[in-house]
Image (tube, rainbow, N blue to C red):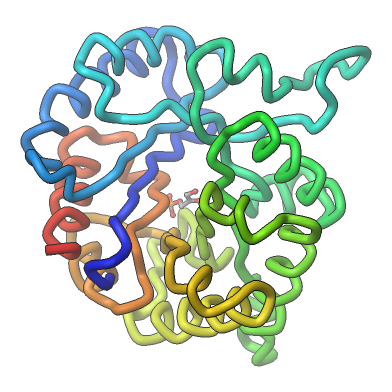
Length: 264
Ligand code: 13P
């Protein structure tokens, strides 16, 4: 992490929690977060509860001072209409979301989302004024075939197609190697740094060096208190997108502490 980019850490709760455990988790994190962020707001944080709990978790976050942003795990690109089961940008804004994940690997590989759909969702999020957290990353087969950088380049280029330089101020990239998600296997700090540096180079080519230098790139994939500090110390790793460890308030707070310290 370089001092010019503020670290950003997200908790992706995936399809976990319920009303009681979700609000309790949010309260436990939000109550301590101001002490971690400090007067200079050393780290930004957001949590992504499942859709049914967004409003209630949002109320808890607001009651605690609003230091942690409310984010959704997905969005649909159409504004309204006959799209059974889907949720629009306006609906997310209505319940207080300020950010949304796009193209999470579970949406790409379990649900089957295409790069084209993810690009439409990215535009819908940005046009609504939501921060777009675009998730990219290679599978194990792709890594073993030496295609990590090519896959990331492809997903970035397609996902950001038509996104302007100005809009990039509201984009965060989350690099999540699929083989490291929920497996306990973390990319080594060196491997993650190499992927992040290559991602930043792609952004410089798609936009310009200034935009690339300003864009935060989170690491995700079995990030936990024991490895967060080393990952966040890498020059191109600007925080993390956390799955399993975000479901334990103590672990998530320790990761937030590591991120706050990395920007100092
Ligand atoms: P884990 O931290 O559980 O590996 O999940 C990472 C992730 O997918 C966050 O979006």
